[in-house]
Length: 136
Ligand code: UDP
Ligand code: MG
Image (cartoon, rainbow, N blue to C red; front, side, top):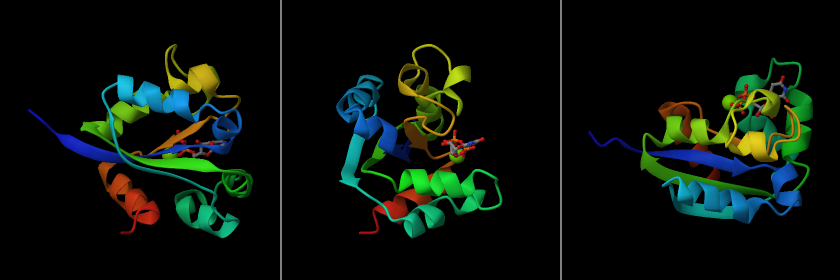
């Protein structure tokens, strides 16, 4: 059964800074994702705080928002059957140390905070996150 979904992916500042955005996009395409929309932007700290609001009570929240707003990022809408889960698999575990071989975070992640990519964690959140970055 087909289950076409869209999910939001972000190539985070540590990866864009190292010019890895092209290579990461190639991985998504090779894995069968269609990049429906993409843009390179820099968010303000306030925008990062809004985006990561679910984490506002976490001890890492402030550093996370400072970091996401620290440099250019590439935000993308990825489309594929079961895109939300598939993207999480291609990304790998939050901590690159725990990520499986062949995943983006294993390959490029520097640390738990500089882990190169973001991906929506549910279909519901994917809709909200896509709306957040691509309103029109
Ligand atoms: N994060 C962090 N320290 C932690 C946990 C998470 O800096 O102890 C950062 C990390 O960049 C992660 C983001 O916060 O990607 C969001 O955390 P989440 O648990 O949602 O992980 P993800 O969904 O990105 O795998
Ligand atoms: Mg998450």
